[in-house]
Amino acid sequence: MPDFKNTQHKIRTAIVAVLIAFSITSCKKEIVEEVIYDNIIYQIDTVPVYQSNTEKDRLKTPLQYISSLYSNLYYSSIPSNLLDNLVIYRLSIGDKTLINELILNAMLNDPIVQANIPDDADMFDDVDAFIEDSYLRFYLRKPSEYEKYGMANIIEADPDITVIDIYRSFLLSNEYMYY
Amino acid sequence: MNRRKFLRSTALTAAGMFAAPYILPAGTLFRSSGTRLVNHVVLVVFGGGIRNQESVEQQYLLNQAAGPSGNIMRNMLNGASPAYNLVYNVWDPIAPAPLATKGTLYKHMRYASGPTGHFNGHTAIITGNYTPDSLNLSANPAMPTLFEYYRKHNDPQKTALNAWWMSLDLGPYVNLNYSLDPLYGSQYGANYMSPLTTFSSLGVDYFSTLNTMHPEELARLNAVKSFLNSNFNKSVTDIPGITNTEDDKQAIQDFMLKVIKGEIPIDYPLPTGIGFDQLTGDLSNVAVSWKVIQEFHPELMVINTTNLDICHTNFSDYISYLHRADYGVGWLWDKIQSDPVMANDTIMICIPEHGRNQIANAIPDANGLFAYDHTGDENSRSIFSLIVGPPGIVNQGLVVGTEEVPVGETIDIVPTIAHILGFKDGIPGGYLSGNVLEEAFV
Image 1 (cartoon, one colour):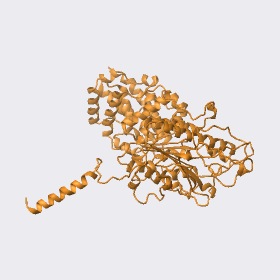
Image 2 (image 1 turned 90 degrees about the horizontal axis):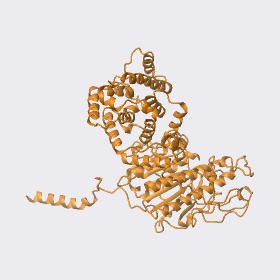
Image 3 (image 1 turned 90 degrees about the vertical axis):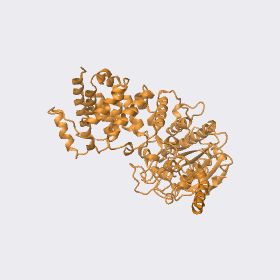
Image 4 (image 1 turned 180 degrees about the horizontal axis):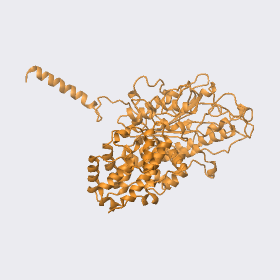
């Protein structure tokens, strides 16, 4: 049985880090998110932040996007100097999908991040649990039945697909750009 | 078949025979673009605020009664160097002959309206429209950019790999690759890069161990991402910034990583024997821009220089930066002529974004020379432009415009480039009030 308990603990940590980043960078109207953040920090309940992706209608700022990438992959907040540098660096390229991909790939290339990523074998051992964890980790919501079905089909149809392939896709997807 | 039916079908067949040659692969009936003069345009916003006195008028220190006159831009302009009292290190020209002999010099042009600010001037050049006092420095321009006109109206339409905006500085300049105009916008924008940041130590530290993605990884990324995106109601077009095609994006990433790793070496515009301590930001921007040109052979490339803005506080350094930026332009033209795709198929246009004041400010430099600001006097609206290109297409060695009767304006650059690349007729009326700088062309 894959060790998803440890992963789930890390997911909680990542959620807290992401929410801290949002609470720092968002305007004061985002009170709802702060309340949920309290729930998670005291671990009263680990319910997803979002019930549906239709609740996400605000585009993350570059600062929010990069800090949430880092939090999701390193399970810690991004150092402020690195965040500042990457935000400035990102300005130097006009195609934001291009530079997002480079920044993400650099993070995924980091041995620290790779140590935080489940084994590919664990993913194939329990595809459903992996999918649920990934949606919670990156989208802060549970997958719909259709999403579970579709994602399971993709994973099970490709024996060479890796956890990094899946994570990369989540982190570069349109939904991840929003909150 | 009765007579009426016969006549109708015959008429339709005849109409089809006449119309068919004009139906283009894109499905349009009439070609929106005209004949091209060449296939590549390089626009150098020779910026930072340059007075005509020190450039085309070649007054050097005469204006400050501190020395002789002389030409400090020997790559671009005809004329001998100052004979003495040099406040800059003289670099021998790289251009075999001044570029003015290979094109048309608009010796006196006008930046006729709007604040004489660097970003205002850049915006006026790139959009073909002067800017109001209330220009928003943190937003893309309201009027379409040159890049959008090119990408929307060129026939056939070209990807963003053919349009580049390379700026020395970040700040508001990052916003000049596309506008907020609802009929144009990011889908027609240019690739943007600021080489001093892209290839800074951060870029080297952070990305030097990275490789471009393997095609199989890329295929998986696109497949999974496509599934994820299909379940979300916002698309990539809702996200700010231009988007390349997948192939173009990978080509640019590959280029970036190769430059960062040193696999694509950068040649710098420095004369033999001159050390890197003499390299300026302007020259670095020119150097990387050349690599982009060499790699992708874009049809439209816009580059800027801005180091000369030191003239607010240091006139001697301004002279030195002007001298070196001139070398960079000569070097770039020399490189263009050495490239089999670009040579004899490129027109290069150089134009400052604005001038500087007639009267110096009160700030002396180490040589006792006074500096100049640009606060909107008539002198700061006086500029020049140099258009160089192949003989038979661009008039060679022609000089037009005098101080008394200037010819041409800043806002003429967009229509002129649209004329060169053959898409001017596709631009809807009401967007551009400038004119083609006709004198430059045979």
